[in-house]
Image (cartoon, rainbow, N blue to C red; front, side, top):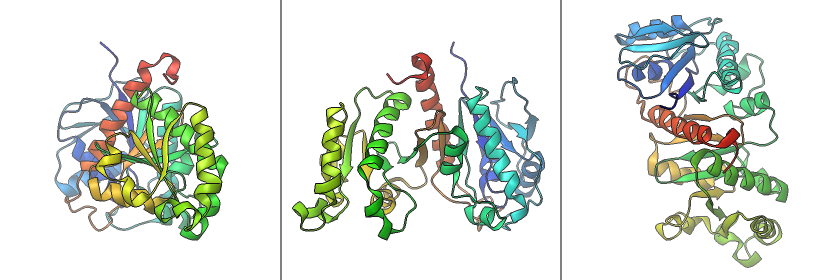
Length: 336
């Protein structure tokens, strides 16, 4: 029998819904071993607030994570200042980042097969005087990699991004041959490495309306995107495009694709979130570890009410489990 997958799960912003989503998972038996990386006191208090009967089992490296209903393995991280649902406290920022460090380091040293993250609040971390632009960049720095790729996925659709959190006025300048080549190679590599797809078929969106209309609506397709895709095809990548984004997301094209590569955040993600919000997962490609996350934010207005929906977290865990198994099955973790 193969060794069960063990995942680290960070509980995210203490004032948000992350802690209670973690507690909801304990209401049923689980196939993956989950270790929640959080303050024991935070989870205990939130369980009492919500009237959830959960036994928090202390976890130490080398121990087996519990999977039974009503129990949850917890790796305690100290430093929590306050834990009032719905009320941010910048004093908790270092604690939040410590949970991410513990989870990431545990993946790098083999204690965990992957990590799943509940949402954090970027604004309050920056208010604490800590420069923080998000999970993705934080994990990129910890893992020491040059480029990472954001991909959101549902059961039916995967969308990766060439650029992420940029003002729209800066996107065209950021779509360079170097960036596009790096992102496409990472996407191709990790669809093989973590999803077991031998020859990934990737649809690439143009930047401009109608993919530039032959240069009449912008020249980025002619001068940057098309030459770069041609060079990548010469390396063996299966890339179709650049295609107009307004027709790319139709069954005609998607039935022949394993993923879509969009040029910017609001080109690809509105389609995916309309199609599957609440059951989508955010995946960071390009890391040496498995990392998935929910597709929503901290939802401070729902924290402590018991009305938060754990659907996206269930999906994030299932996808991380699948990715970890696929990665583990490959010799030395290499791409097939």
